[in-house]
Length: 210
Image (cartoon, rainbow, N blue to C red):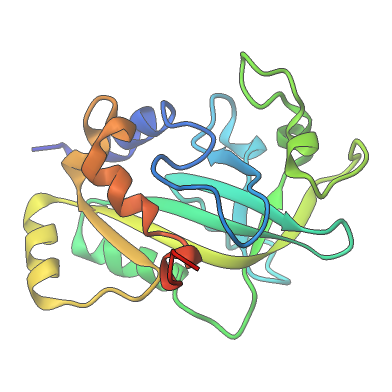
């Protein structure tokens, strides 16, 4: 249905319409929410956050979609992340799953200085660093923060989605949708997609009535 070269660009174009908080996620009971959309951006991709392992200067993970929820304190900050990856092939899925696999090393989120200083949106001139709640003064350098929790949503071609759902089991941090759910116009308003995203949080592991 889609040419290989157009899937990423089409998904990113749709994700640019998504709000600062992933659609469907409710306010957390585990602390304050300070969600910011990190990817895709409206300007140079080099000025937007990315993920990496400690000590790595070359290997970076650049999800098609990335949201950061800042938490903790200025002394011990962290982020919870929600990522989206569009996978045009099964090999592409395997590669991207490996990047988010549980590891004994902590994943780091790198927030470039220009991204932190830029306004949240065109309609909200608040600099992003102020919205984090954990950066108290205007930064002069990029901000590197450990990832506490991650949830990843994978978009698969219809035939791959069908085969995966019938023969594989996702890990606890993984969620899967047909590619059409991401490429649809106003995909963030899809009630079924919102319901799935609402479960992409640690709050879903606790009894809601307590």
